[in-house]
Image (cartoon, rainbow, N blue to C red; front, side, top):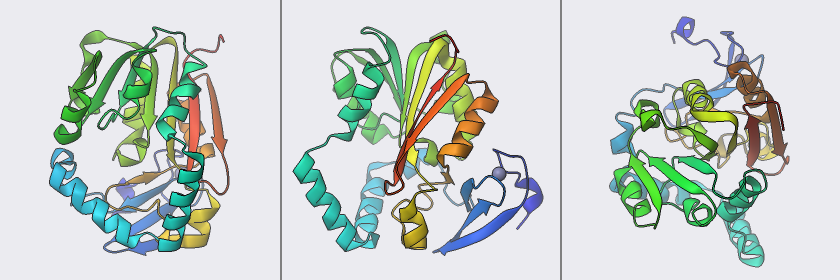
Length: 261
Ligand SMILES: [Zn+2]
């Protein structure tokens, strides 16, 4: 492996622990800041094709058979009991911080599950790389849906009061560029609110390579609350808060572009 080209994007060191083997991939962990990534990144091909209808359906089937059946069942029970809609929860978090009518961008909006909740309250734009999912999102009323690669989209000079990244940053081969782009697209007092898999959760440490967060080559990079906060501050965000629970596979993070709030 050519590690010379493999500086950790959080701490800039080249010192990796080859932690797990999953099929043909290795999960590498930075020994200093615990940022994780799969190796090799390549062989993924075009992300547009990767997120086509056929490939999405194929991976969903595979993931179902791979996941631990007991935990999958437990999750279904708890979901049915509480009837929690995670997108609604995410919307509520953002709605407490941004006024009605604020402009928001949902990066990786999928079929519009989050924008459906956000649309009555915010001025919504969504961007989705999968044509298949983006077309479904376009059926929502009063939202602006762009289909394409977030890093290549110019947004015609538009900026936003809020950006949502819900379970999406782990899919970027260059997450730093994506977060930098969010920073640039935000208004001076804008908020980036995101959710991603928590590499530091106990479930990963207990289940190791069988952890549900591992989905190579769909998930490429892995953050924990500390190294993500560090990266966001390095990019220029003035204040970063994270919320994580040891037994939750995901964590939340809010990054504020301006300090005055
Ligand atoms: Zn590092």
